Image (tube, rainbow, N blue to C red; front, side):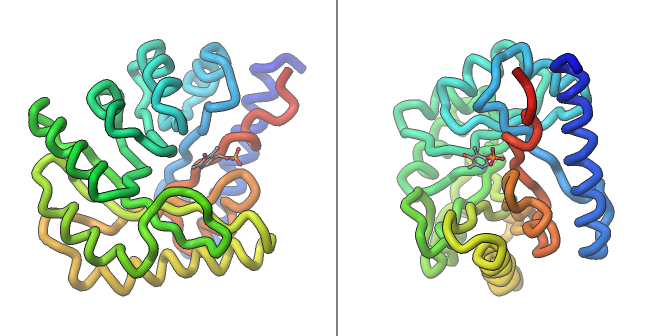
Length: 231
Ligand SMILES: *Cc1c(COP(=O)(O)O)cnc(C)c1O
């Protein structure tokens, strides 16, 4: 099987699993956005994935996002990894959604630059939910304050929350983490500031996206499962 046939099969398989998990959670498949995470693959494979109909693509390093977005400006690009403040200016023009807004200082820098460009940048607050998290993000206890601060920034349009599950502990730990993010969202929702939304929950990767959907994910970020068996 050539690589594009294999990629097509993988994508169909992931989409079927998304649909089944959505159904189990009482939702339709089209309520879940698949973000194809292309950080492992070349521009050529990324283009094939786009041509197969996966139009939301994610990169975790800003430099990779720049070059892939330049090659594929018609995709909706998501940054899912840490953004250094000195890379904000170059990154914003490429972005459909900044999923990894992980500090107030970054939010202020993004907002200032967005205002200068005459844009509002859609963004998710990254939450450090996992017990073994060494990564970036707001501790759950800080999300309410962050929400209020970020919602007041003129250059950011807040759309929801993003997280990564614990690396250890398997499916049970992942489910607990995803449920915790959903509960945090549900708790904050009634007092969500005007102009901001908490509708989106970006959670779940190749190993746990079905669990994430069962627990309320509206976006899943899937990389390796799409590229299995590709040369
Ligand atoms: C790499 C990455 C993914 C995709 O991981 P896979 O396990 O390959 O699906 C999702 N989210 C983030 C933040 C990542 O860095």
